[in-house]
Each structure stands twice: as C-alpha cells, then as structure tokens.
Amino acid sequence: MTARGFAPRGPVDLGLVDPGLLDDVRARVGAAGTSLDDAAVRDALRATGRVFGSDALTDLTRAARAELTGAGPLQRLLDAPDVTDVLVNGPRDVWVDRGDGLRRTDLDLGSPDAVRALAVRMAAVAGQRLDDAAPTVDARMPDGTRLHAVVEPVASAGAVIALRVLRQATHSVATLVAGGGLPAPWEGMLRGLVTGRANLLVTGGTGTGKTTLLAALLSLVPPDERVLVVEEARELAPQHRHVVSLAARRPNVEGVGEVTLTDLVRGALRMRPDRIVVGECRGAEVRELLLAMNTGHDGGMATVHANAVEHVPARLEALAALAGMPRDAVAAQAAAALDVVLHLRRRGGRRHLAEIGLVDRADDGRLVVRRAAVWEPGADARPDTAWDELVGRWAS
Image (tube, rainbow, N blue to C red; front, side, top):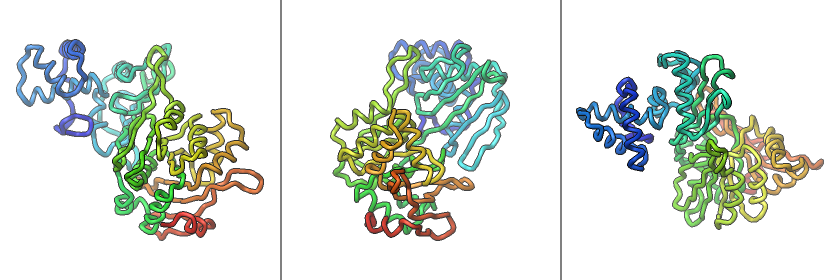
C-alpha cells in the first residue's frame, strides 16, 4: 500500500465507475457512518449486489475512492512517490513537478466543463465552496494535499487547478548529509544548535526543503523533552518519542469552525512544552511565536519564506505588521527571541542548506542577520564574517 491508501497497480481507470454505481457507494458508506477508506468502499461495492472478480473489485475500489475522496483522474499523478505538484491549465494541459522542474503529461481530462466539475468536486470534498459567486478556493483535501482552484469567469479555461502534495518529512541530519543536502562539517554545528537550545528560523523559497530540514533538526532534540508542533497541515513526522502535533483548521462552507495558527501557538504555551515549533509562519502567528521565545521557551523552531538571510528582517517585519506590531517592536522582539537563521536553496532540482546567519540588532536599532557561513554543493563550505561568533556560542 502507498501512503495514500492505494495499492500500486498502475493508473486508476475512472471509466470503470459509472455515476449510478458511484452514487450507490456514496449512499451506502454514508449510511454506515464509516470513513471512506479502501475497506469501506470495497464493502459498499459488494453490498450493491453486483458480481466482481478480485482484480476488478480492487480496480473499482481504487477508482471509486479516487472519485469520492481524492482528485479523480489526477489521483494517479498525486500518488506517484516523487511528485510534488500537479497543475491543470486546461483539459489537455496538465503538468507535474517531480523535483526537477515542470513536465507536461499526456493526461486528457476531456473538456473545460469536466475540469470545472472536477475542481468544484475537490473543493466540496475539502469542505469549501467553488462557483460563480465564489470563483476561487484555497483548501486542503482530506489527505493533506493543498488545493488552489479558480473557475470562470476569473479563469477563461473553465478552471485552473494547482495541487501541492504534502509528504511527511522524516529525514535525519545524517541522511541529509549523505544525500548532499548539507556539508558534513556543518553536522556538528547543527547538533550544537539544537542541544544548546538555540531558537532557529529555517528559511527559503517554496520547495527548498524547509520542512525536511526542520524534521531532521527535531530528531536531534533530547528524548526527555516535550515538543509541541503547530502546522497548517501535518507534514512533520520527526523521529522523536514525545511530539504533540496540532493542525490548523479552515472555516467550513458556512464560515465557522476556523482554528488559526495564532490560536494554536497561543494554546501551545499552556500545554507544558519544552519546545514550540511552528511549521510555517505566514502571518500574524509570528507575533505569538516571538512572544513565546521571549518568555523562557527557548529551543524553538519555525520556517519562513525568504530569498536570503539578509532578507529575513524585512520578511519578519511584513508578517508582524499583519499582527499590528510596529517595526521597532519587531526588531526588539526578534533580536531577543531568534538566534540563528538556516537558509535553504534549490538549484537544478537539488535542495541544500546554503547559508547560516546570526540574528542581531544594529546600532541604529534595525534587525539584521549577519552571514556566518555559505555553501554550494560541489564546493567547500566557507566561513563568513560571523563564523567565529557562531562557533564560539553554539559549536558542540
């Protein structure tokens, strides 16, 4: 079985499932009050009274489940272990990214109306509305896949769909070194940062491996510590025995039931954490994170989108502004709360830890990040201006 619950038997033939059979299966599973897993769908198919061979039943189960809870004809692309993104620009304009850039596929979705219907159904599965009155949606599928879709009249091709696959990150620092993701001489430094309880900010662009590095760092946390992890969707699966994972929840179609990252970070402070980790700071929750790190909760970690270590201050100021924090307050709080920035880059399909920086406050009061070391795969890691200070404070 794959991580998404489908046996690896090749592409799902959605033509196997006629609409009447699909409606019958949906009604039977709903009446039973069970989740739409393979076993429930298989039982519902048998209960219809139709006769299926074992192979046909397996294929029908996969196809029906893809239609009911997944991404329909796009599911086989999402199930591929190396796919990170699936993009639909039109019925015969489907692209995938397997970590080495976008490649066009030969998948044919039929017609613009079929693409729109698929987008609307995925939005409904994610508990969101997508129609003429609400022509855009940003949601999460039941398996954690991020969905962003736009339909007419905003999109001219019926619908445009973007899917980001979330895979739980379980790497260790040692495997990252072995895979060329970080230089061997930095392994001891990273261990020292974690065991020394430095407050770490992992930065980089989309798809650079921020969550992967964060999971590896968490595996270095001493086993007797309690780690509270707050995420938009559960991606982190660190090799640690005491991790409590909290995931945000979007409002439902009626606009109620939302639980934000800010709510979760604030609540995590009351759950006796040894360390608080925020999977990704995208908004006002950065204020709660900085406050937590300034109130004795050291050893915390978070990720933030940024282009380089020197751009981190501006990024933090922009996020904190969403929480109403003035620039001076952000500089004071961040300089006191954060210790080290670990910046990742992606070059030619390869992701690597490119820079290490020390967080500081300049004489004029500005928040700054001083570069301590840089590295490019194939070359030696090079110390920079703040290297000696970094080693003196955090080397194990």
